[in-house]
Image 1 (cartoon, rainbow, N blue to C red):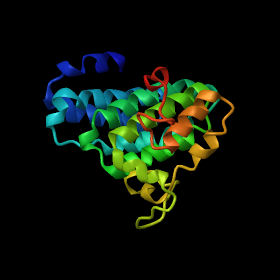
Image 2 (image 1 turned 90 degrees about the vertical axis):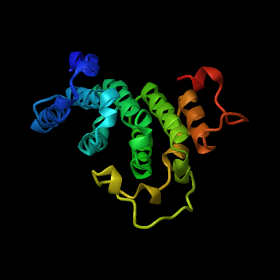
Image 3 (image 1 turned 180 degrees about the horizontal axis):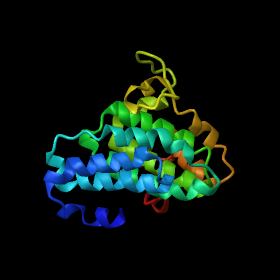
Length: 212
């Protein structure tokens, strides 16, 4: 997978559809470890970057797979998978910002905040730093900071489809719990996000933290 990802820019666009089908089939087969399935997701989006941008392909099934399996990560053995997940999110959301709906962004931000409660502090910091980037990339997601904001429907946290879980009807209450975390940097990131991730002022991050 790593080799395929490295040379994705050399692959003829005629093979993209078939490659994505194969990658998804590998994921669905159940024969891969969690980290191997993450590499499949990562490879799919590297294939779609560059030349793949001109194709009308919505890799929703890969978004769904990552979204529904995020909670496989925890403070135990799978904590090592957080780094790969964050790399996946970078190519799936940040670098494809024009192709990502607000609903999808809201759902991932919400689920990542919940995940930050279940992993080791270094992973929580990475997750919160990613959410900071996502909140800057998708400014309208700040509605998750307003506990009085209401849309249509009810938030369905158990739904596996990020597009349809009604994440606009929830709030990031997890940040208030993380603000009382025992690790000072986790506390700082949580307070920063609660304030709307400002770039200046008392709640802005110090330069050494904002580069994380």
